Length: 150
Image (cartoon, rainbow, N blue to C red; front, side, top):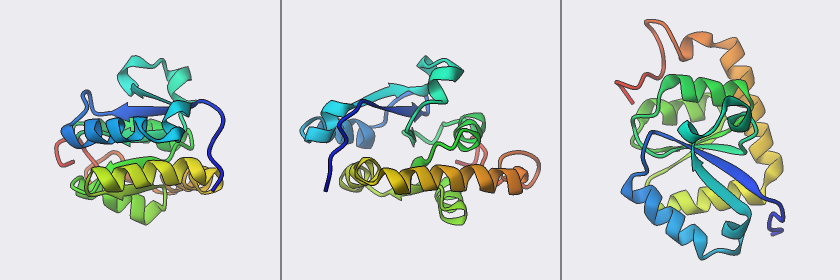
């Protein structure tokens, strides 16, 4: 498969990086694609910079609903831990991202996203469309995702 040859921004939501994600980042650094990626906590990015991210990687269960909604509004696909059941279900229902169980799966997901730009872009568009059709999924009493339940 063709490797990406331009710099890609991965915004990490959640305030800090958990052990699984830290291990994945180490493993990613050993892959040639890792040279083309820039991984940054989303809190460190301005909204304009965040809007250009290629991916929102939820790195802890403390990711805020506003971060998820912002990503979906801006056609940014999600990568979420399987343990965040509501976000996993959002990815399934909206076809807006992938979920992983462990570091090996997270690495495969990251490689997939950047080897298949077409599907990454499609997942981002799906998320935006889903949010517009289902705004209650991110707010209100029947929200699919909230930080407390993540």
